[in-house]
Amino acid sequence: MKQRLREVLIRHAVGGVALAYSGGVDSALLLYALVQLRAEGLTPCVVAYFFNSPMLTGAEKCEALDNAAAMGAETEVIDIDPLRDLPNLRYNPTDRCYHCKRHLFTTLRQRADRRELHCIMDGTNADDLKQYRPGLQALRELGVVSPLSEAGMSKADVRSLAREWGLSTATRPSSPCLATRFEYGAHLTEEKLRLVEQGETELRRLFPGTALRLRVHGDLARIELPKEQLPRAMDLSDSIFSALRSLGFTYVTLDLEGLRSGSMDASLPTSLTQTST
Image (cartoon, rainbow, N blue to C red; front, side):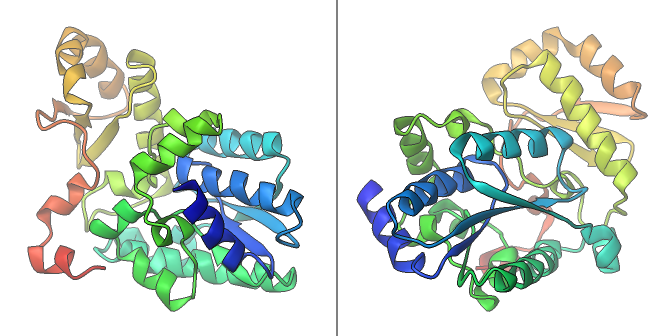
């Protein structure tokens, strides 16, 4: 696994790399590996580009940049606002991820060209190819390289190698963009994104270190937690309700199906999700 990834990276990195870096376990693993290749003289330049967007939380930005600095990586921040730049995204279309990814990576391509970095990479892993990810089409159209999926590495493989390399992100819960917390067709605003950020911050105080999601259905908050945390959630129901009611939610529910990726996709036609990749 480690050797396969190294071979893929060496093959693509000869002309320099612009890495789309979110700070999650996938892109952090790639950045660490690329920094090592740079030290060995196997790539002329590696730059990690972080998209500073309202779709992400402030905590994610701080953690990502701190981890990149600890690796000794060169990092650039791209300030970008998809909701401002792409008005159609404000109504959370089912192909939101396609338009957003195309916008982000077109911008990244322009930055990379200025630095004469020939390869743009991202942290898509093999598991992502099995899910509804319309953004993958944008990556293909723009020639973005995804070394983890090319090497056949699943999320479990990535976490295993991150632990082996001693990366702090090895156990970091996945944190997709905040727009995924809303129903398709919902009107997105930065105020609503910040509301979700605040709500999840409050929930993490009650469930420290736990992966969770706060899904929004109008004035109803639907909480997704790992199933083993559901009994504790019932014990803390008053605290949970009080915290979310103070943010303006009228109803607060606990999803008995537990935490799962892409739960908002359940309302999409099967034909759409099966043809997305």
